[in-house]
Amino acid sequence: MDEQTLFDRFHEALNMEPRPGAYERMRFALTNSPVVLKKRPAHPMRWPKMGLRVAAVLTAVVILIAFIAAFLASHHAVVGSVPAGQDPSVKAYQAMLKSEYGAMNAATSNNCNTIDDTGCLAALNKVTPALQHWVDHLGSTQTPSGFVVLDGQLRRHLNQAIKDLTAVGAYQRANNQKGFDFARSAAVYERAWIDPATFALEGTYPKVAGSYQDAVNLARQALEACINSTPAPADLACAHLSQQQTCAGAETRCETDVQAADTWLQTFLVGLTQNPAPSALATKGAKLLADLAQADTALLGITDALLSGDSAKADLGQGSFTTAILAAGADFSYM
Amino acid sequence: MLFHQTESDLVRSARAGDRIAFAELLRPEYRTALRLACGLLQDIDEAEDAVQEAAFTAWRRIGNLHEGSSLRPWFLGIVANQCRSVKRSRWWSVTKAEPLEGEAPTADLEASIDLRRALRRIGHDERLVLVLRYYLDMPFEEIATTLGITPKAARTRVERAIHRLKPIMRVQGAAV
Image 1 (spheres, rainbow over the protein chains, first blue to last red):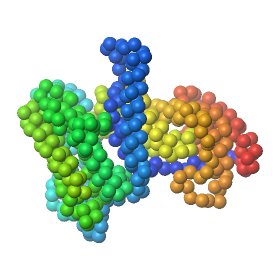
Image 2: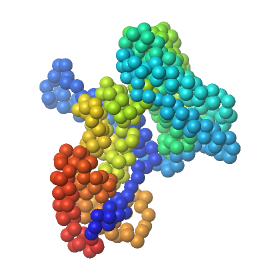
Image 3: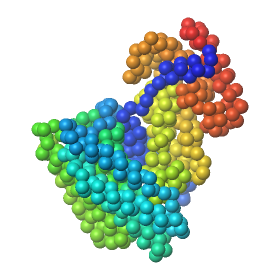
Image 4: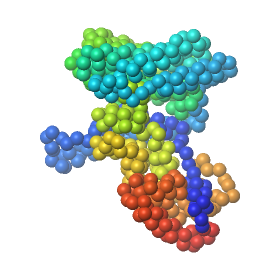
């Protein structure tokens, strides 16, 4: 058997592709699990006790992963589309997104890694206008009806990215290491939010739920776990923030929680955008989406407050987040 | 890193504890990792689980990945080890020979099943080099990097694995 035949035979025999949402399920588990970086314990425990604890944590993680994977995999839809419907503006809107995303991506650079990076200012001057152009273009383009909520949040996150990047420059000029690190981390996070949202609106993002009801159930289970104070590891960030653990003096923890909760929320926003509500649930579905978006906006408010070192404003943001989460939780009782 | 996510940027952020950066780091490798796991386990559900477990392992060991070194062979090595563990833990299970999920019936289906069956009858290390070479289309240099051996040794292992596979296929009646 020659080499080419071997290649052909193996490809024929084993050819499999990831199912829709496979990477996202892994990403969700990875970014929302309690697994921590391996570090030497400060006070080593005796092995049997530590072994039990490790086993307990691992069991919890495995159960969580199995639950999420089972829930999503059992509804493995194959289409990565968004509810384009018959709206003629959808194609133009998606083409605009693709173009603006490409322009933004081309304007990025590998600078501003450290506060001493001399290329930072030039990098900021390149990428910030690209983001602003994108925001402006969104403002002058008709948003298809099914995309309004996610589009609105995308604009907010783009604007937040501009603020973060502006703060990066300001903190560098002020030689403020802590502020620089915080702003840079916030900017990098925004990129991690903007990408999936853009791809979802473009229709190229894998489906996170197989149907509208699946998307609702996914959000319902997570929100109820957060609100009822029995959160699974994936819901902990929401629980921390909604239980009013103040950000004052715990800015780093707060920032981590905000980013984890925002990734958590984004999954529901994307799922509900990809699977539009049936007409019988249109009003209730719109209310749920609006409340989830409100929670996302509140998280942006907390980031903004932390960026400017205003912990009182951050606490207010937590209040808004809690209100929105409770409102979203109440929406499920009508669905 | 400023809105620009090169691998080394993401490695740096991940090493500093940024899980989102780590997840982004794995994004371009996910398909290859899953195909590797599918090739080794021949079960899409187990393959997804194995890659996810491997991702957790990789996250815990991110400190071992040095800046400047490539993520891909490091992560694929972890995936391969995870698949080895899965195989060990299910040694008692009944191996399946039916078509893979989503597989369309073809004229070569029988031959494909024979190859999959034959792959299950050789050792993990032999199966691994064959999957890397003939399913993931890796050159010997990349196989060598993934396995931490020389390219010459990689070539020898592939040849040896083919040598092992052929008689099994022949016994099963498949043309090799």
